[in-house]
Image (tube, rainbow, N blue to C red; front, side, top):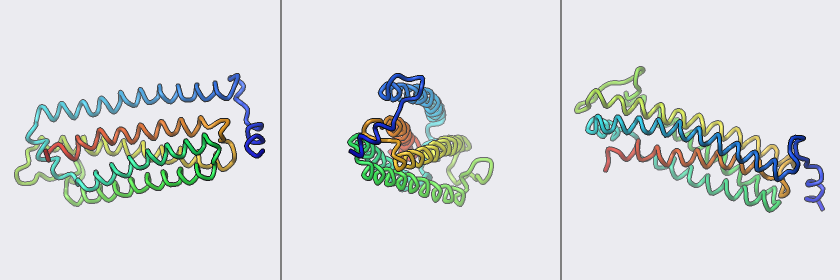
Length: 218
């Protein structure tokens, strides 16, 4: 009865005929946006590989100073958050609002842990004098071209952290909508759309992780 009452209050926007159509358009819009983001991060990673091919020894030597355990922990955190995001979507699709809210909170918590580890890593990087233009010094055996690796590192991880922060904001908004009863089994497209974005953020880290933390350790 409760779910039917909630469903009755949900209406599509005036430009859509049905809630299903509204959901399909929202998903299409997110896929188009993610396509542009893929081109953006793809160009960034492609630039890294140009550096890697041009200065293989210098880049490999510099990358050994990246804090491996921080990157590895963050990889586990984001992969786990992908699972909890899927569980939140499934719970919402089945009309289990409380379970969906719990999984969303778990996803938000994992995202915050990711940012905390990344913040700790940035502090360690500063202490290690590997921040280009602010606090950078060559170590014995380092080549000047190795600084290019750290430029890539801070640009790539910084932009990724911005995307993670944006995702956390979206997850918080979806959690609020869920608790307001504006997401139900009849219409859960918003949580699916945010789930697509969050999965993209996780996938980007899967590609950044080997280029940053594994390049000089193979």
